[in-house]
Image 1 (cartoon, rainbow, N blue to C red):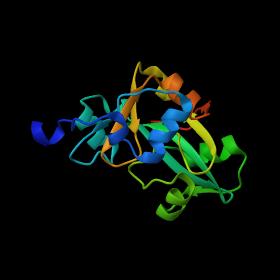
Image 2 (image 1 turned 120 degrees about the vertical axis):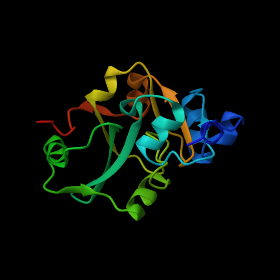
Image 3 (image 1 turned 45 degrees about the vertical axis):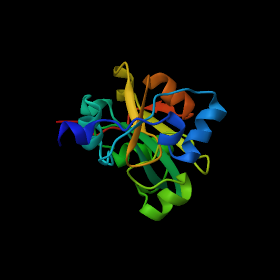
Length: 171
C-alpha cells in the first residue's frame, strides 16, 4: 500500500461516518475523530496498516447467532473468538457466526464496517477483556473505509457491553 493510498481523506467527521453511526455519536454526545481512507479497512489487518497501529488495537465487531438471537462480540484484531466460550458465557445451546444478511438486518451495516454501537437493533454485547490492555483502540465507523479511535473502557461502555473472556486460548 502506498503512502498516498493510506492517507486519510480530509472531510468533516459527520461526512466520513455512516449516517446511522454519525447519528448514534450525536445521540451519545460523543465526539470522535472519524478517519476515512481511500482503500478499504474492511479487515483488521487493512485497518491496522491504514491507521499505523498494532493489529491488536483494531476492534472487530463480530455478529453471532446464539440460539437464533444475534449477539455482538467485540474482539481485538489479533485474536480469534472461541465460539465455545461464547456459548458457555451466554448459556446458549448453539452459537455460530451470523451470515451477511443477519449482520445487515441486525446492525444496519455491512460486514467489514460494523461499528461497536449505533446499530439498527439492540443486541447483547460481549467485549473480550483483551481490549482493555490498550490505551486506544480503533473501530469501524459504519463503512469499510472509516475508523475511529477511543479508549477501550469507554468503547465498551458506549456499546453497553459486558467484559468477558472469549478469545481462543493459545497453546
